[in-house]
Image 1 (spheres, rainbow, N blue to C red):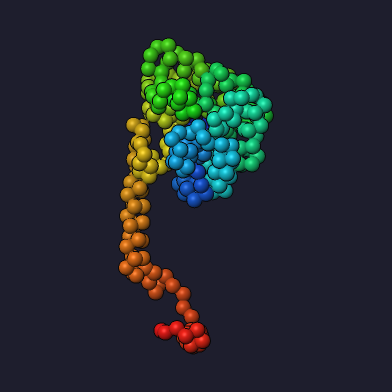
Image 2 (image 1 turned 120 degrees about the vertical axis):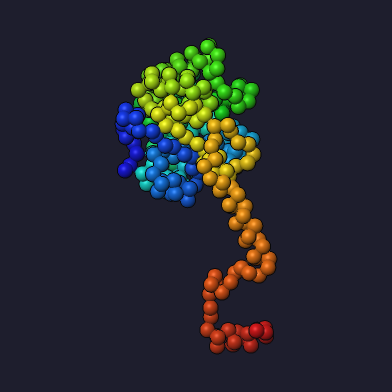
Length: 282
């Protein structure tokens, strides 16, 4: 069944947990979609896991459109959300609407995601008025890594916890259709989830959210630069890949691969004439 803003809202109301994973290419999106994931997030996390940057800040609109288009071609039923990269929406309301529109029109996303609370409510309101669904993002917002002084849990003291709750209420009022909560205490995320009418998606925010999201390289053991505390490794695909690569190298060097079953044949008379003409031995 096609996942939409309405079906995701119904899941919250019925208590059916929403599943979301990242994807950045056609093949991965196709596999995730066939498995029945509700949402696919084309995250600006691609800056680290796909492009090798230290953080998400260098990611461009062109990067996001390129990867979102690939994901959209692979997913038939998943609700596709594209991150708005750093400085694509902070500069002005006009820029925010135009860049959100590009992710929908050129990238074929179904919704856009942007980071921030009260300070981006005008952008959220303007984008939703352009008939583009917006997913908000609170807590640890990676584009603010320099302001936060690193990747740190947010909302642990009273002042910061109250601010996150108030921001959650404000982004919902501004028109956000969903809210991502990253690296906030589980109890705080549960309070926010109960207070909002829109679904909450947790990443390092406990089981009390309406759904969960993970970077697929983290949950499959494919990204070893660092492992977030919240990232459970469901399969060790990274080790399987290394094993496969090593076997390929060994068999290629030893001549085992390619074997007869992996090659194509030519008529013996034809190849005999070719060898004779070009003076090569059998």
